Length: 195
Image 1 (cartoon, rainbow, N blue to C red):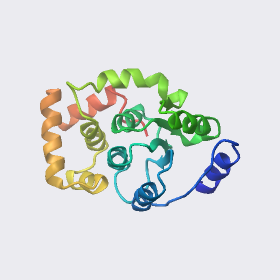
Image 2: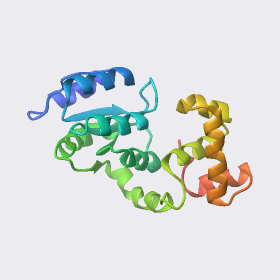
Image 3: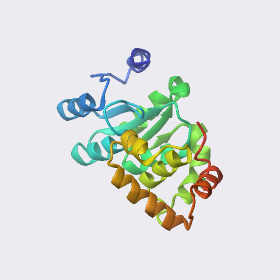
């Protein structure tokens, strides 16, 4: 997949790929060392949380704009990435059309979101407003609704089980929901359970 994306970007006259990485640690080292104009980051890359990496890089290397690439077309993930500081959100199945445009937009400091996600983003932004759930709480809610335990969620998000329990408590309080089954219903109503 990475080779195909490199060929795609290198075939554009005005774009040049200067480095590749297969885990988040190497991504961070490359960005600090090479200071690219744009970083194309797979949301599911191993080595930690891509969302946290985006936030860290936006603070540490603000001249590098991030375009997220993913197979997951859930607009909640797009909103989380954009809130974290990403400039673009592109679906892998439309990368041929969208990725070069997203990279060009990000290089100019502009936002680009795959059209299929963009149509649902407004509703998600409204439902995830500040008076409701943070992006991390939404991520935890989604995993709870899929049936994961606090320990499993902690492992997936590279957090402690105690931190996950704190998020659970906040989610229940903010939504005024007492039971797990009600959380699942809420997650369904918000479109968080699409795979």
